[in-house]
Length: 99
View 1 (cartoon, rainbow, N blue to C red):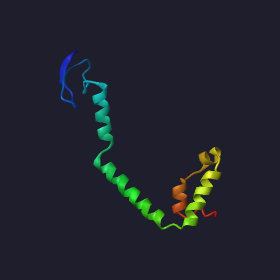
View 2 (spheres, one colour):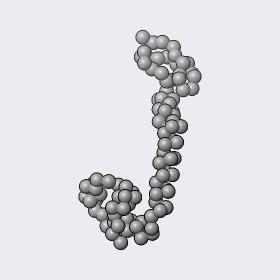
View 3 (tube, rainbow, N blue to C red):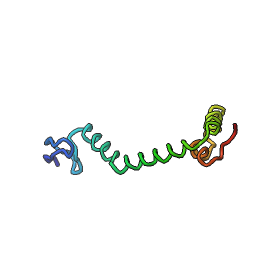
């Protein structure tokens, strides 16, 4: 059943072919999806996590950082697939001190 609806994104009026149509175009649907994806809470959590890792990395010695980077360059694709934790996790937990 065709009905007139108002687009939840841009406010334009459109003819909805289905009862669950909420947007006039695919572009409006995409804009809405992206807006939901980047909520202020998510952005704040990302920023605080970044600040935490930045502080943790700043406490490492140059030798520890260079050792982890050297380990990354020496790693094969198969080694990378089989690694259980990220190099950052290993480095921050002092598990990869090879230099």
